[in-house]
Image (cartoon, rainbow, N blue to C red; front, side, top):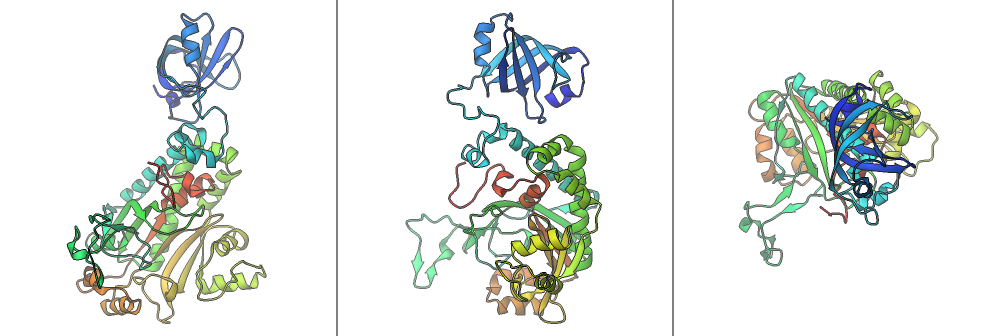
Length: 459
């Protein structure tokens, strides 16, 4: 039985077998109290080991923090405070010891910076065990939301020949020996490479998802994406996961409705199904995070245009590090001020200047703005970016040329606009940022199992 199931028995006496790792051990004159955890929940199961236990002098010294054990015994109501049940062992088998002179997880609390240095062991702590369970539950909720609404799950490629964002911050993929790259006067000769052209790790599955949306109507992709952005902040990773729905016959208004409903669905799922872990986060990581999430699920997201957002920032009188001016991208300090100080809830900002947005976004009639929408949340800022996509072939081609992109890399994307094109929209949600928002964790490197960032590649 898993410990989560055992604790739910609440004192119903019976014989059990439990497996797990020793979290702590404390001794009294006649007893040793061993806290056992198997990862199924944040709570431990207490094993009470009498000093009279057979061969206790051989077993007890091996039950140090980190040791793995199987315990067979009787589950009884606890005689002490702090737990409802405990185990009186009949048999204890130690599978793997953890030398207390070497095992680094001896203290109850370690800094997150220290735990990043031993990322292979940090899942054994309360915090990272809880993060893993919440991340798993949120993944399930994402698939459930789309499945319940008839979306088709599409696996888009990790290796691509096109740049979705047009920013050029991509990891190159090559089969060339790096000491023998064929270079001509025009640059690298990619015609001799594995794919016969330049290839990169994807920054988004959006463009490929659009192919299937224009055949199956509503689709989504959920997978890893990569950005070769030399940024060493608490909000950026080189490898992260994106959720990207694409919807045919969908305008920007319906796109915003879907994004709001989607976020609320995930929050409600976590609050219902991860209550124990969320209570831990609310107590130990960010006070009141449960109440904040409940407030969001019960509120309507504010919707304002980019121009209105700039005007609100200007008239606020606040001295920002980056003064707000029309035409600039909203900075993190602006997004936090809008959500935390002005509206005190999530905000959807629409109609951004076209010059700061991607080539595929549909232009408004004013010729200055596009039908983009970003969902901003308190504390973190943007967690969703989306738009109505340009469905007109000639306008899309003109925009690609205007930005100096190589139209040969987008021939198939353009061709979609020639055969049965329809209004369609979609968005991308940064999964790790949403996990940060849900758990209250401050650094994005602490909500992904194996962080990939500048100068870090340990696994």
